[in-house]
Image 1: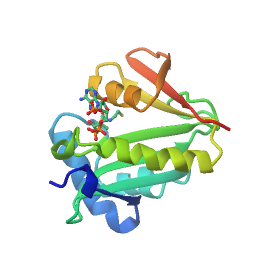
Image 2: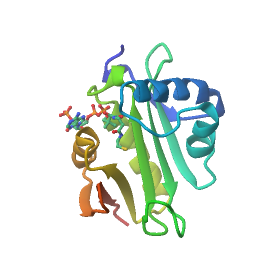
Image 3: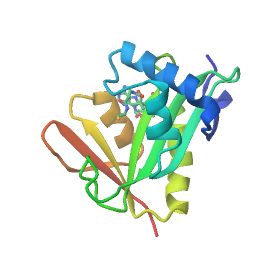
Length: 160
Ligand SMILES: CC(C)(COP(=O)(O)OP(=O)(O)OC[C@H]1O[C@@H](n2cnc3c(N)ncnc32)[C@H](O)[C@@H]1OP(=O)(O)O)[C@@H](O)C(=O)NCCC(=O)NCCS
């Protein structure tokens, strides 16, 4: 596995969907994901989400998918209760690549995309039991600001 210095971050394309799906299935197998991981879901929810702003993929030197970060624009009545017009972020790093700076590299790219899109803020909707997700977003500068039952919602405010 490549170290962080050898990781490529770029926008995901439909050709990445099989690799992204395989990486998400590895997260499911590791007990770190409960949502779908099939190719149709990856395409509709991440790569070609109609409300999507960016979907970045992290790749090793040999082209293996190490991670995915998707940012979409919150619409009225979205299932997370995120304020309309904010960004909604999701981050997924391969269990085999965890804690090597992949998530950090992905957020650098996503933060730029969010700023370019003029978002006022980004929200992460994290299960309270997900200590690594909470630790990651806190390290990226997100702050807790509301707490639906069993959930820690963290926000990242963007400078205008
Ligand atoms: C959470 C997740 C995205 C972190 O990705 P990552 O590539 O391992 O993160 P990085 O290596 O870039 O870590 C950056 C910082 O985040 C924090 N962090 C990362 N993993 C952490 C963990 N398991 N526990 C506490 N803090 C953690 C640390 O401060 C870390 O910096 P450090 O390693 O110098 O201490 C990844 O573990 C993952 O995909 N988990 C499963 C899915 C998930 O929980 N997604 C997020 C919630 S929806």
